[in-house]
Image (cartoon, rainbow over all chains, first blue to last red; front, top):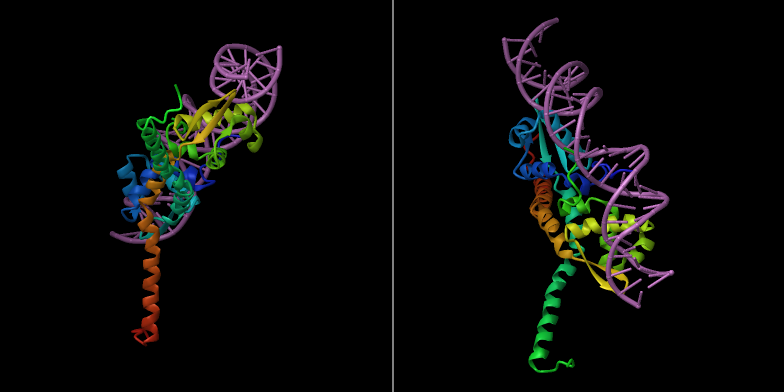
Amino acid sequence: MARAATTSDVFNAVAEPRRRQVIELLAGGERSVGELVAELGSSQPQVSKHLRVLLEVELVSVRREGRHRLYRLEAEGLRQIHEWAQRFEPLWQERFDLLEEVVQELKKEEEGVSSDG
Amino acid sequence: MARAATTSDVFNAVAEPRRRQVIELLAGGERSVGELVAELGSSQPQVSKHLRVLLEVELVSVRREGRHRLYRLEAEGLRQIHEWAQRFEPLWQERFDLLEEVVQELKKEEEGVSSDG
DNA sequence: GTGACATATCCCTATATGGGTATGTATTGT
DNA sequence: ACAATACATACCCATATAGGGATATGTCAC
């Protein structure tokens, strides 16, 4: 098998730089496809494809406004990513503990407690 | 161009379910490749490949322990993912504000302020 | 030499992403 | 009814790469 489909989960959807860009743009408020096309500098079909992916994983939603389709960020989906990463937060904060251990080691050396020699 | 390389950034590295699994396993402490092979049920070369990717983006580190290589999670790298997602936290919390608006609406109705009818 | 891995191949299939074109469709305007 | 706008989709093409399977070999430690 190849890599999991980008539409399978939020992680894959967000792995694409352009899609992250779309998300960032939509964070500023609803946008029509045309506006996104202009801001991304991609073709309309390409943008629509990315929007489709984001739609599949429910990271965005659409509503009609006349002949326009306004896309809106559904940040709720980003929450799982945030929470998944957050699970490891204690581990990167642990670094401070390690730093402290190092400091303790240095102190011991200063006190001449080095058992090595 | 094809899809971005999985080694290009942390987002792509984490987009792979098995690699997330590796990360989760390593969150429990250092593991040798052999242990990971057993726990993941993949072949040794496959596991080594995934570890290589995680190593490239510095999500893990290695140290030798006799003939074993112990992999350790470098959670620091997950921080960027956490922080990227966190930028949108206000947007999904905004939902509570919306909920509050709805509550306000309901209150008005109870007070008989409905201008409709 | 053996154990534990890293790497390199070769194979194969699935899929992504980009480019471009064409067409379907809904909405608005005349 | 007909045209135009704004998109969604469906095609075409082409390249890159993933990720799995399996095998083979290099390397370092014991």
